[in-house]
Amino acid sequence: MSYYKILGMEKEPFSTSPDPDFFYQSKEHRSALYRLRTAIELKRGVSVVLGDVGTGKTTLSRRLAQLLQVEDNLMMTMVLNPIYETEEQFLIDLSQRFHLNTSSENGKAPHILDYLRTIEKFLFEQCVERKKTVILLIDESQKLTDACIEILRSLLNYETNEFKILQLILMGQMELLPRIAKIKNFWDRIALKYVINPLEEDEIKELINYRLEQAGYVSRYPLFNDAAVSEIYDYTQGYPRKIAIICHDALEYLVMHKKDTVDKEIVRELIRRENKLITANASYDTGKAK
Image (cartoon, one colour):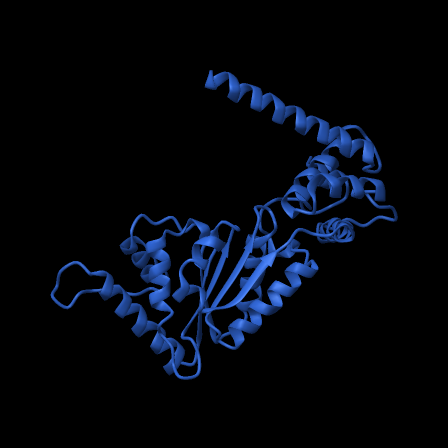
């Protein structure tokens, strides 16, 4: 039996999968979500949300998609792993996601301009004639090549006198920032620039309790005491993914050792184990290098 069922829960509370139902809205995430929805509603064009690994960008994108899918006038397409070797690959994938059939005028294989014209026509039909909003969200956008970013810049040229036709959301790691900052005619088009910071200490306790409640945990006493939460903050520095991993390990430890509450000693023991593994791995890598 899984540890969470032994503890009286229906689901795993600390999975690292981007399940929007377990999305804890910290001050940072709540602000980002509100500003993204406002940018989409006003058809501002480009929104860029950046953050270090493990700050919850992907889960934020899934929560946004969950909120928007109930609105009939919106069309949202998500690219989760934008690894493209050429502009053609990128445009072919976009065309397929929009269910477009692209052909050239002379019967030869479509050229980049053919794909761009087809996508432009599609965006005009949907956004101007049918009054819909088309949203393209690209996660892990730091993986985009400069050539693909240039394609996106070209797509952003499509606009009416009142609004941008394509609503583009780029979610990425901080390394994307200096790259797009160098592209002035792209940087100047960004309507929303937002950086997600790690959680504050008081929010970690709220996150833990929220996830436990979402998993179905009901009890008179907390599974994590305040000292444990403080240790978790010191170790994770507020990064949601690291919090989820150590909380998962802590609950497994709780069940295996028949404890009632996660305290600071349990958290410290788990940290010692993790550091021991990191040291062993570093020694192994050093040995291989020799």
